[in-house]
Amino acid sequence: MVDDDDLLAALGAASDAIRRALEATSDWGTTGGVPGQHHSDLAADAAAVEVLDGAGLAVFSEESGWTARGRDVWVVVDPLDGSTNAARGVSWWATSLCAVDAAGPRAALVDDLVHHVRTTAIRGGGSHRDGRALRPSGCSEVGRAIVGLNGLPARHLGWAQCRALGAAALDLTAVAAGHLDGFVDCSLEGLAPWDYLAALLICREAGAEVIGLDDDRPLHDLSEPVRRPVVAGATRELAEALRDRYRSVGPLPFADGLA
Picture 1 (cartoon, one colour):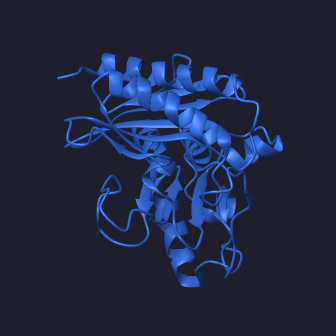
Picture 2 (cartoon, rainbow, N blue to C red):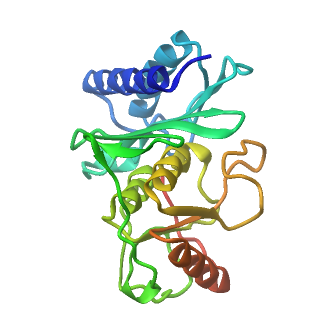
């Protein structure tokens, strides 16, 4: 059984391989195949799968689906979270990797590939960035909160300020680090596990809360429907208040979420 240090090392090696693959990529445009898929997504995915499969881990990737399904530990991969930002020169995109076992998310890495900032978490071991333990802001009131959004709600939910930044893994990690107080996915389809799982573990280990909107399934459940709306808060009180307010209004029709 792979230990936690080896798991984090494998995630780090995969992210390093992604960085190298992207540095060698000249075409960051869309492929013309799957909607929203970029050539950079495919290059990053191939690099990650090679490393993780070689480490004896199963892979569930946004771009290529399952590789070596059935192994005891699997890594949920978004090789390039925020690929539209990356293609357009907006400096907010990352790699998101979460190792999962039968008990749920076990090890996570979100690598801000623009600013060279790597955030990690181990189940029961806290969340860290450059050796520093992360702590959320402690905000518990919607009226005082600065909230990240994916998509738009049908009307204002009463926050102090909001941001729509375009990379959910980084947005959620910002809640863990206290840069944002909360996050609400207002997209019509919801987020996929590769969008939020790594940041979910990072948030929880830091003391922030991530909850689902739609049903009682654990958020690491990969059965269909795989896309699910999520809400995060620096505190459980804030997460629940944002969830309840959003449930009362729903999404703005035809509002696009992340690409």
